[in-house]
Image 1 (cartoon, rainbow, N blue to C red):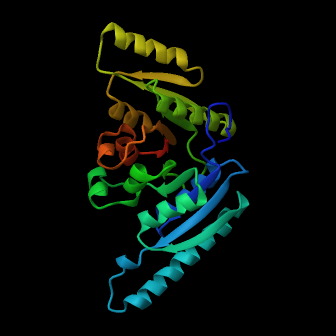
Image 2 (image 1 turned 180 degrees about the horizontal axis):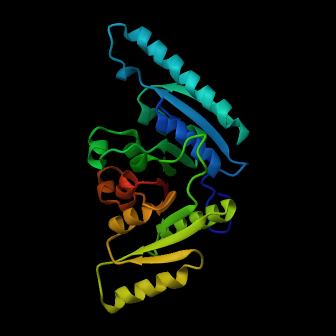
Length: 269
């Protein structure tokens, strides 16, 4: 895969933006268009779930819902046209399954969704699309809590969580490339490990040496608390993922932070 700079995968190369008719999904279209380089390919994908339609006039309600979604995605396509061209498509079926199929067909490098304010446990139990993408998507995932069309661009501070792992190195490379391209500020959060022995101190020192750009924040708290605290002042948080899926992802720091962060979160595979 090509790179913005050495070591930074081009995760904005082929982006699928999920549209569900909500205000959140309209905002995610705008934030994604702002974050992408001009040469990136953007597809706005509206998914209508016919199984969610419950009415005595179900077929008519489904038709009206389809028409509304089709109108919304084409309107959004026209609105963001000043920033970049975008393809608009409509699919029918269970949203998570349809999006995963579309990711495979498009060979997408990123899926972007609106990040709603909801409890992580409820999202998992109810099968929320955001949770499904964080667990199952083969590419990077952006949960957008960005601004609408008329608002100023996303806040200029980008936060990246760093623990020295290969996943964190990928996240740092992506964050550095993004800040360099858009002129944003970078802060790197190194959370406490819970240890005070020599190996823990050596690990912290290695992290300092590995970070050459941005402001380094060393937080003694655990990763989730440290990252959520830093997210309060950020416009975007970039996290690495170890690639856990299904129930194994319940212990994932990136999944827990992504569901609870007050800002947009980009999870890098």
